[in-house]
Length: 163
Ligand code: APR
Image 1 (cartoon, rainbow, N blue to C red):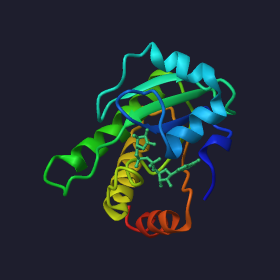
Image 2 (image 1 turned 60 degrees about the vertical axis):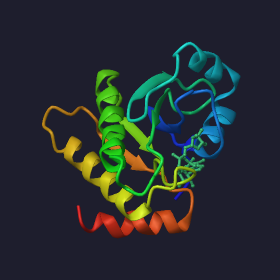
Image 3 (image 1 turned 180 degrees about the horizontal axis):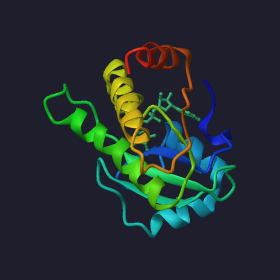
């Protein structure tokens, strides 16, 4: 439970939209905490496709980097949403390795405005993070999933037992 903008880690992940120009939710909180320079850097990135990830500095955040990823909007589950959410976690972890990021914090991607069911989303998040960290080649030492509300937290806690 906590606020991802306050986490003292090498990188935090932002649940952004394809414009990368900010928004509400965790995207808004990260831009507010990082300051206006984050938007300036994002403007140069030319957006981000759903399922992909791009990295910027963290500016005024305690975290050195922000990895922006665009989760799927839940549309009933027949449109590859699970595959796309899986790609978000995989692409963020891949970028973290490329930038020698040792500690990383994720929010619960897509489970807010994008309405992805929390049970399936938390299962995907924990499975992909565990699968990645189990690889001998991974240099990542710690991954946090920072839940902003109790309901989300309890879902992740419940899923932890199954991974
Ligand atoms: N720290 C950690 N988690 C947070 C924070 C915070 N400061 N603020 C919100 N959250 C949580 C929400 O409670 C939710 O559990 O992040 C999770 C993801 O919710 P959203 O931020 O709504 O993200 P998402 O569902 O992926 O929707 C993305 O919303 O803000 C816009 O620009 C964003 O269009 C994009 C869309």
